[in-house]
Amino acid sequence: MRRIAFALLASALSLSAVAQTKPAAQTTLAATPPMGWNSWNWFAGKVTQEDVKAAADLIVSSGMRDAGYVYVNIDDTWEGKRDANGVLHTNEKFPDMKALADYVHSKGLKLGIYSSPGDQTCAKYEGSLGHEQQDADLYASWGIDYLKYDLCGFGKEMNSKAPGDRLKQNQMMHDAYEKMHQALLKTGRPIVYSLCQYGFDSVWQWGPSVGANLWRTTGDVQANWASIALIGKTQIGLSKYAGPGHWNDPDMLEVGNGKLSLDENRAHMGMWAMLAAPLLAGNNLTQLTPEVTGILTNREVLAIDQDKLGKQAERVYQEGPIEIWSRPLADGGVALSVINFGEDENFVRGISLHLKEAGVKPGMKARDIWNAKDLGAIKDDYKYSLKRHQMLLLRFSK
Ligand code: GAL
Image (tube, rainbow, N blue to C red; front, side, top):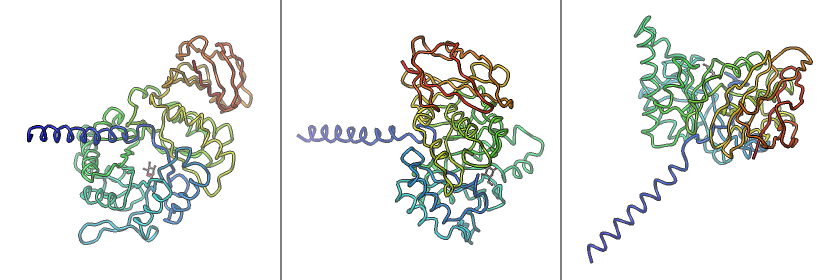
C-alpha cells in the first residue's frame, strides 16, 4: 500500500516537474526579436517618468502594443546617487520607478532599464561597477523586464587595469558581462539581457555565452539615411550567429525621426525586419503620423521580422548601388528585399531578381509587401523600378 502510494506520489511529482518545466521552455526569453520602444533616440538625456508613462499610453492607443511592441525601455539618465549602503536611487526625473513599472505593467507592457558595467554610464550617470548584484536585485524588486548594459564607462577600467593589452581588456569585458548575467539569473526574474558594446571583439561569437539575448553590432544609429544604409549594408555574414533567444542588434529604429522620407522609413523598417533585428522604435510617439504608424505596425513586415525560424537575411547579390538580400521563413517561403542605395533620383536598371540563389523555388507566389499586392509566380526578369532609397520587399510562399 505504502509502495503504491509512494509510486503515485513519485509519478505525481514527476508529472508536476514536467508541468513546471514545460511553460519555462515555451517562454524562452526573446524567442523572437524583442519589440518595443526606447527613450534614447528622441528624448536622450531629457527623458522623464511622465514621458515614459505617456509613451506607454501611446503605444497602446496607436495599436503598437497589439502589433507586438511590448517593451518600454528607459535608456540612460534615470540614475541618481547611491546611499550609504550602496543602494542606487533614481534621480528627480524618475520619482518612483516601482510605480512606473506597475503602471507600464497595467497596460500589458513591460519595462526596460539601462546601466553600464563601468562606474559611470555614457552620459556620466552612476554605473553598476562593484554593485552588480545589488542593482540586479533592485531592478527585480521594481519589476524590470529588460536591461540594456552599455560598456561605455567600463573602458576606463579596462585601460587602467590592462593598459595596451587588448586580449586582457577583452577578457575583462567578457567577465563584466558575465557578472551581470549571473546577477540577473540570481534574481530569479526573467530579464531580457541586451549587450551594448558596439560589436567589439566580434560580440556575436561570445554574446550567447554570457547570456545575451541581443547584442549591438554597431555604433549608434543616427536619424539619417547615410547612417541607416551603412549599418544595414554592414550586417553581412552575421546571420549564422542569430536565432531564437539571441539576436544581432543593428541598433534601435529611427523610423519617424529626423527628415527620413517615406521610402527611407520603409527601407529602414524593411531592412531591420529582413535582419531579424530587435525592433525598438525610437521616435516621439506624441507626434505619430498615420504614415509612420502604418510603417511601424505593418503586419506583413513584422511577420518577417518575427518569423519563428529566426533566420536573419544575407546578401544574395549586388549590382552597383542595388542590393538583393533574402531570408528563409518558417513556412518554407522566402523573404526577398531589393534596395536602391544609390543617390540618382530615378535610377532604373534591369536588375534580375536571382530567385534561385535567393532560395525561391519555381512556382512560388510572390507578394509585394509595401504595395500590398499579390504578384503571382514571377521570374528573375520581373520588371520593377526603384527610386533612390526605395525598397522592393517580396514574400514568396508555396
Ligand atoms: C550609447 C549607446 C546609446 C545610448 C547612449 C546613452 O553608448 O550606444 O544607444 O544608450 O549610450 O548614454
